Length: 122
Ligand SMILES: [Mg+2]
Image (cartoon, rainbow, N blue to C red; front, side):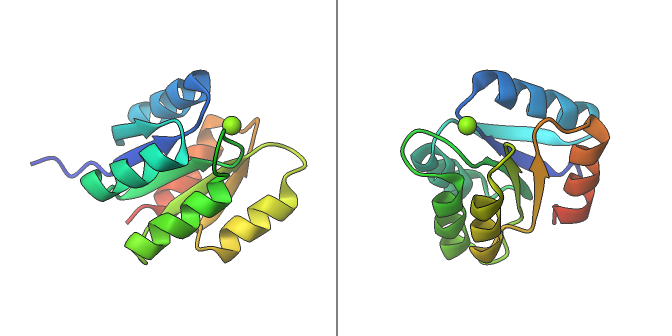
């Protein structure tokens, strides 16, 4: 049995998903799933029950803010870190209000992501 924390990475950008996954994997996490939109994110969350989620804000279809709400409806103990761009402060606030636990603003340092992950994962 592995005691690695299991992570779901949600971002519409394949490059960002790969980057976040790489940082987390090198930091000792196990990336168990990736999703490129809200629908996939909720499906993957329900299937995988991860210890941590990283959530992009701006995606085609639903914004990350709404996806956070849906995931927290499924699991009120969900541990979600918002990954936002610059100038998305009101969306970040909304996501925190919807149940996200922490946030990062792109571009971020690897250490910032890992620190947020250590603090937030269950
Ligand atoms: Mg995006």
